[in-house]
Image (tube, rainbow, N blue to C red; front, side, top):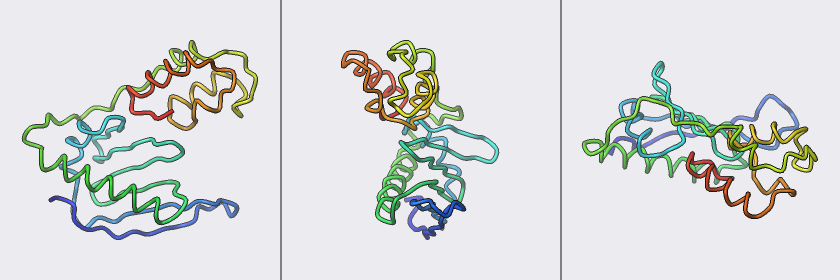
Length: 173
């Protein structure tokens, strides 16, 4: 087991009206050697060589792993942070344990193409999703920041196509 212990710290963002927390997990062990293996096992990470880090976009949040820290930009409470950190710890240890059978990946995962997403959207610019245009909504979808459910004008067939397309990039829409 590579990662056994970490210490969590929660801070409020500088915006006084923010209802969420930021979570930092300070790791007792250096996980930098495991990052390329984790990058292979869990799709959707953005890998950076210097300094070695992985960033994962989840709906409404960014998670960044470095040698001795995991940072989560938005969590509702300690329980949400603990669940996410437990999942990451398991994935890190699983990738490390199986590293002999895993080809490490030092590249960032491919990103979904915004124009491919836009082609499947209704392109009405109705603003029902909260965005000024379908193009902006497509960008938000490509980054995992918004759900397909926000687009009320999207028919079921195109919604399923988009879900399948985004799932290939580990984006839950």
